[in-house]
Length: 157
Image (cartoon, rainbow, N blue to C red; front, side):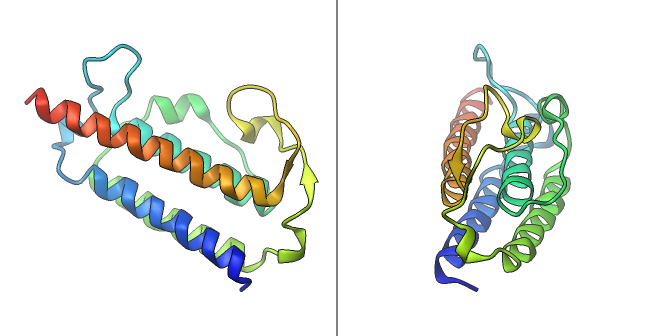
């Protein structure tokens, strides 16, 4: 594998593990409860949304796989820490396999991602390399949200 692609893949898969680990100490109720803050989501919802974004962008946008995304389902999700772990492991494996097929010569290709994979707003033209960076940026932002959510729920105990 190309060293640049390998670096992105490693860092993205590390974020998946960090997101899952950040929720480890919450009870099942806490995992599915949003803190008492306007507009807050539960840790499970934030993780599910972040994993949905990673799947859509890595597999669909970056690697060109046929993919659908259900944002409303991401924000209505509930489950257990163990279930989230299964999703995290599967996603990590899917990403690792998909990037093996990624041609490094296409990292500079520019295109407009499909609206249904984009998320909020209107898609803009991006370089494939920029899409990889977006996945890391989005995951890092939401890892911070998860850490704040966990801290808030601990204070509410």
